[in-house]
Length: 136
Picture: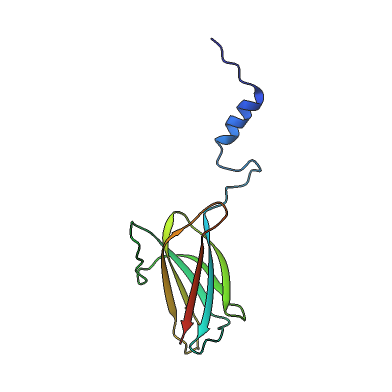
């Protein structure tokens, strides 16, 4: 017996096996939105703070160790209102650590916050992580 496949069906089958979108673009990598606010001890916004987002894989734990060094995922600088919003790309569920520090010669000490089980997704809505840090 001979199987006859319409031309359009074979093209669709071929395209479904390719690792790119129909446009030829690579698929959108998984991401999360990290919204950071940095304030000083008096509650005022800190402009120019350097923000680093690091990530480590989550291993069935709801607790992240903020001292475990992770892979750098993103870097940004706070705006005049002390905020940043960064689309951070990675894969899988991760613990993320957000670090805020001022460039030298500032006397303000860095601050760190860790979040566990952050879900990186390829489609909207992205998981959103809101972080507030205080530099003293």
